[in-house]
Length: 126
Image (cartoon, rainbow, N blue to C red; front, side, top):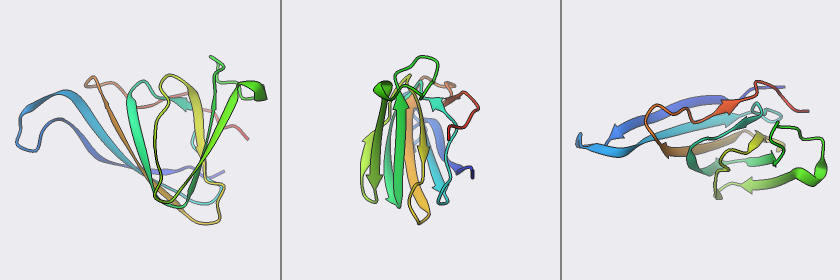
């Protein structure tokens, strides 16, 4: 399966005029071909996203080990062009492009400086 292409647009704890901020901001731009999916991961930071084009399906589980086999613990959301969402925090999930066209979206994170936006199981779920 194909991996997403991720480009970091911004990473800063300073405003445009150089003033120190109380938090670090990160802005990431994703492109995913049809069939591409992310690894199973969780986010320790608060974040929000916006679909620029295409369709994004996100699948999450409340299983603390990232197991998606128990359908009673799994939730799914489909987002279309022009829709936004807030990210889950400390919940294992993955994203997949089940559409026929390229998917493009942006994620914005804020949190303590130096905290990675993603913790991954380094696995794929099919």
